[in-house]
Length: 264
Image (cartoon, rainbow, N blue to C red; front, side):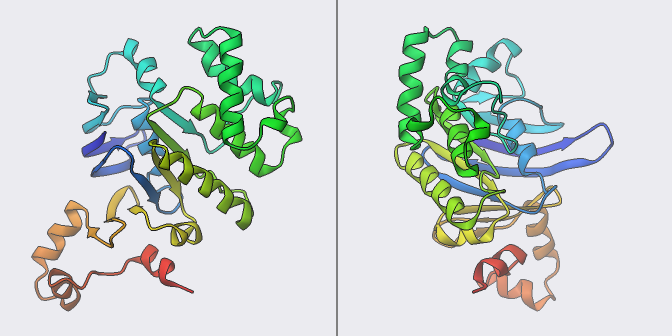
């Protein structure tokens, strides 16, 4: 469903936001994209919705090669990908149901049908009772649910959630993650960017870890770890390093994020 192959993105400043990233995501997966601020998580999301294009490499979504996708096909791509932005992007002067129906209005859905679909997703995320309130009248968790509802209203195949729990307390964060898990259970592929190790600990899901724009770890739900290409090459060359020898024998090197996951 999603494939990045040897993808790098260099911005005008000469800085690489990501470098030589390769991974794929199967339909129906729930994947955590983790790493500190500036590690490249948001850049990957921007590539997946064709907001930017890679400097090198290929990005494929639903069999579309985004490096070759004509501009007039980008709206069609974005119908298949719902995005919960880090800054939410809800319109302050519109009610929750008006915010939710907006994507439907943009593609020409009639008002009655749009309102019905919006009510369905607001009910799904548990805030239908707040349909006529404005974003400023909601709690942090409720606003996040509204943003998720708007992202779901076009019934996307893929949901990208960029730090959806960043400004929430622990209990509310867990409620949002359970909501995303429920959406995933109904068949939607979910990629969630986060640096919150407490959340990741609670779910046995695949983890892709980024550091300074490089993929340093790809750990599946069964504990499988896959290092980046550069990291693998270093391991093969450095045969005198005892830790790397242990890794080749199956004792996998624990990185910073994994250490945090194991902390009690």
